[in-house]
Each structure stands twice: as C-alpha cells, then as structure tokens.
Image (cartoon, rainbow over all chains, first blue to last red; front, side, top):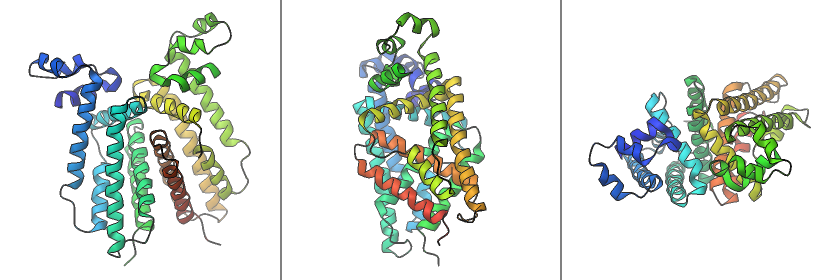
Length: 185
Length: 185
C-alpha cells in the first residue's frame, strides 16, 4: 500500500503502472505480480484500504460536543497547509474519482466514501439539533451541501497555486456553518 | 468541434482517440489528421472553443438586477434535469480537468474558465452591494465559495444516480445566497 501511495504521488493515476508500483516495492516483486492481474485491481484494493483509514480517522479522537465534532471533521477533510506530497496524492485521488463512472469497482469505493462522509455529517448535525446547539435545519441537505463544498475545495486546491484562495474558501465554509447552523449564545 | 463533442460523450476522455473523433467527422478525415498532431492538441482547441461559448452564454440575456443576474448565472452553471448526453459530456470535462495538472494547455484553459466564473460572480456581488440589495460581504471570498460549490455539485451529479440529491443541494445553495447575501425587504 505504501508502494502504491508513492507511485501515485510520483506519477499520478494515468502514469502509474504495476511495474512503477513494483519499483517502489522493497519486497519480492513477483509477489506483487502474483497477487494482482493489473493496475486497476491493485488500485481498487488500495482505495478500499484508504477508505478504511479515512473512516478510522474520522472516528478517532472526536470531541464530545456536536459543534466541536463538526469543526474537527472539517479540519480532517480539508487540511490547510498541505505539502507537495499530499497535494500530489489528492491529485491522484481526483483522477481516480474522474474514472469512477467508467469503472464499477472504483465507483463502489467512492460511493462508500461519499456515504460515510454524508452520514457522519448528518448524524453530527442531528445530534446538534437534539442538544439545542444547532438550528432545526434539513440535516441531510446541509450534509450534502458541505460534502459537495469540501470536494470542490479539494479540486481547486490541487489546481490553484495560491494557498490564500484555499484559506479564504475554508473561512467562508466556517462562516456558513456559523450562520446556518449555530444558535448564538 | 461537434465531432469531438460526440466522441467525448460516447467514449469519455480516456476512451477518445483522434480516430474515434474522425469517425464522427462527416467531412474529409485527412483534413482532421492534417490539422492536429494528436488527440490532446485537438482537445485543447475544443476546450478553448467551449470556454468561448461558456463566456458568451454567461453574458447572454443577463437580467439587469444583481439578484436576478446571480440566479441566472447559477441556473446556467448548474443546470438541473440534465439528460444522459449532457451528463456524459460533463463527465468528459471532469476527466479533462483531472488531467490539467499534468497538461499545461488544459491547465491554462481551465484556469481561464475559473477566472471568468469567479470574476463574473465577484462583479455581480459587488454590483449588488453598491445597489444596496446585497450585504457588505467579502465579494471575492463569496465568489470563490460559490465556485467551489458549483464544481462539487457537478462532480456529484455525474456519480450519483439520484436527481433528488442534486436538487436539494441546489436548494441549499439558493438558501445560502438568500441568507448570506440578500438584504430582506
């Protein structure tokens, strides 16, 4: 999985081949060829692994209160100050996602991620409404909106050279959450 | 350009080749090969043509008032009820955009589109502030936010089978514009 990550960072999705992943693989290369027929089979496994990690990360060290949980969640989904390696990795993910309508396995993995993100956001918003800290908004609709926003920001972050654009968009997302959700004390 | 559009709808970006574009080209195929070295050279021209069209469309029949202009602009950028052909075409555009960091010509074309969209949104918001119909928000920051949102919605729309998800996200974008920008009468 580390070898696949390195190959994707270095060559992008289109430029990654099973032999380039093998170059990054310190153990027996024949083992790799034995397990995987082609690059897309390996990448599908890699996506599954990544999504398990994402789910674990989203659930790890979550603060108790719904407001803090939402902030924590947004920080995890849209990290600011990404280094070059992280940006290249997100770029490879965006390429794989663009392939998803043509590849049933990729599609299933991304559908699963989308479902996890939207469900976690929805639960957090609903908890906040129940506890009287969030307004009575349409929880799923708000979750879908934030999810689309987060993805749009990630795509922009790999294309734009200006970190300031990203930071101000993130600030605007925080403004949205404040005004749309929070009940002022 | 029509032949390229048709080939992209039918085969996606990865599956489009200059010979598949030629199949859709009713005139002399040799003319096509004479003009273009490879598929990416042709697609770069196609993107330029498309962006000219987008700019023309965004400027065409725009209502006078900033509020109506913003609504009109969002309707043009995020058309609801897209048919299968339109969805496939947007899918090919998303694939090309995912390639942009690896392809300087694609990148320039998409940078140009982003600039046009953000500038038009910013001008509309500034006009609304001047005319006293919009709040005194950070115009560029709001424009970047809407732009990222619109792109996230387009990506979601090609992956999700459920038109209801799209419609409710668009509704939430309208809510955002209402609450964030409009000064209630």
